[in-house]
Each structure stands twice: as structure tokens, then as C-alpha cells.
Image (cartoon, rainbow, N blue to C red; front, side, top):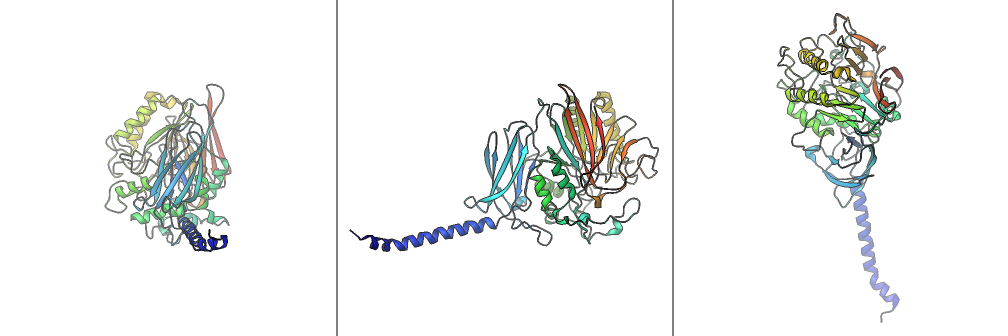
Length: 495
């Protein structure tokens, strides 16, 4: 028998080797985890009563380096906690800008969920990543109260005061100087409106386009895939975006500035091409699953018993802006237009909210030709749609327009009786005074449009929409305009 002291001496080399090996593995795992970051936070998108998309981008840090956030390949484990808990693992690949996106299905309507993540360079070395909370939509059978926010015009360069902006090309319509950039001590956190929105605890957030500006600053404009991606990175890395998106699910549209350039269509031999523009929007925003075979960016969601929303696509299918207006000129395209009319006719929701990236009523600037209000633009399609709404009776059944694009807030009533609510630009530095009915430089020189609300003085902000049941079969619609600090500017209600 070997004495105890001697046996310990014989085991000592093995123990030391094992200890060193374990220590080395621990350090290796810690090093791997620390080298992977989720600098853009986590985002939940396109929530329905029974499904949700969740995405996260892996990177080498969480601070901008030379205006960008370098990405990193790796693994993301998404763990959904709640009713029907499930875990999905996805790769973050360079071909998708290191964005991992998954879709959770078979969820329960009107239910709170939490999605935790673990991130790393490989599946054996995962560390804690960001967490998101969200609630699935109540669904058609539920009379739940719904509150959501609508925004547009999130101009990073104007807010932060990018010196590369050619100010001569960015004067306001009334020839006043470019607004001053934000100067608050909290500037590094990002847009104050995002903090104000989070404080309100909406059920979801709708961005109607101009989420980033490929053409601002215009010296130089973003043209290549890396330059387009950089715009999204610098936007979403701001702490107030990360905080908001971790707690509030999102729905997205793009407009001109985050598609190609100001007032763009699909013509013109310049970059970004329409193909690159579409690739980037589907990559950066949670419209559908990554690499969806035939993705559709127009859709409708039945939110509750009383509410249904429509989110049309305004850039991909449009005719050239310069084309003579008439029956053949379209923003929506034949297939989408037929779908819009069909789904509106079939809906029995009390409130049908058509949320458009561009205005349908306005008024807008007379010089433009890229939207449905513009003279020489797409008025024929607009008039045909208005005729459908009247003939089908949809216009008398809780139908309203909500729009982005315009840099001022308003409530307009067309001579047909149709009404439109504009959310205005999100930030003060991107806001302007708008065209009033009767202005000879507007699309309503004769003053036929009535405006119960016109925002003055100029300011940024957002639109809060609330549908609240009152009794077993009744509900009310409440529209509230806020400034960029959350102060209420105006409210209107509809029975």
C-alpha cells in the first residue's frame, strides 16, 4: 500500500495540469464572450396574435468606431419564456450584416413574453445577451384597449449636427435656415422623443419611413452596401433606441430617404439601385424571416375586435414620378391595389387605420410629384381609391388615414369627408412649418381642405393612437400629438 503522503505527491502533477486546463478554458470562454457584443440591442418586429420576429446583430463592440460599428460572425440563442416557451439558435453571418433573426410561432394571443439571448462566436462559448419583452396582439375576439405610436423623419445628421451637410441644399421651404442641431446634455443618448415614447408604454411602435437618411449628409451620400448599413448602425446604437426596442415591439415601412434618395422612384442609373435598396431594407428591418423566398412588405394586422391597421408599400412597385398622371400610373401596383381594396372590404373592425408612408390628403408642396396629393404626381390613383372608399361604404365605417413623410403635424379633412392625421418629424432639427390650405405654393391652392389642427410653432414629436372599448360593442378612437419631449400639443377623438 502506498502511503497517503506519497499518493498525494504522485497525483499533484495531474491535479495541477487539470487546474491549469480548467483555468485556460474559463479564460478562453470569457475572452470569446467579451469579444462579441450586441451593440444595436435587440428588436422585436411584426408581432401578430400568434407570432413574432426577433433580431439581434453581433459586433466587435458597442461604440461607434469611425462612424460605424464593425460586425462579427457568431451564434445567437433566442430563448422565449412564457406560454409555449421555445428556443431557436441562429447564425449571425457576414452576408446578412451579422444580423440573426428568428420567428417564434404558435404563440398565445394577448400574452406577455420575454425573449432572452445568449451570444458568442460558437455554440460552446455563449454569454448573456440582451433581453426583450413584448405582448402578442389581442386578436379579433378581444376588446382590449390598444395604444400605439406613429413616427417618421429620424434624421441622425441634423440632430447631431453633421458638418458634412450642404446647407445650401437643405434650406426649409420658406427659405429659413437649417434648424440648429440638438444641444441638450443628453445628446449622446439619442432622440428625446424615444424616451418620451418609452415612458408612455405603448403596445407597439410604427415607423412610417425616413428611418435613416442615405442622402443626408450629402457630402458624400451613401451609395454602397457598407455605406447603407452604416446608416442603420449609427442610428440604432443610440441608447434610447436600444431601451425602447427592448420593451416595445415594432412595425416598419421605408420611404424615399431610406430607399434611395429624396423623392426617388425606381428609375435612374445611380446607386443605390432599387435591388440594393430592397436587399438592405429586408436585411436591416424585421419585415419577414431572413431570406424569405417572396417577401411582401405590404400587410394588414387585425389588432383587436375594434381595430385593424394597413401598412402599404410605397416605393417598390411605383411608376416613374415623371410619368404623365393617368390610369396607368401607380404607387401601389395592380396586385397591391387589389389587395388593399379586398382586405378593406372584408374587414368588420370598427376602426380601419390606413397608415401610409406618404400623404393622401395633405396639403403638400406644389413642387413635388412623388405622392398621391401632388399635382402631376399620383392623383389619379388617389381619386380612384377615394371613389372606391365611397362606393363600398368603407369611408363611413371608421376609416382614417395616418401618414408620415411630412415634417409637420396636422389633422386634415378632405372635401370628400375623408380625414388624415400626420405624425410629423420625430426631432425638432428635422421639423418645419407646413403648407396650409389656400397657399398658392401648396397642392390645395383653392383652400378646399379643412384643418382642425395645424402645428405651429415648428417642432418634432410623435402621434399616439388609442382605441379604447366602451361597453360591450362600442369603442372610441383618440389621436394625440406630442412634441419631442412628450408634451401634448393637440388631441382629437372619434366615436
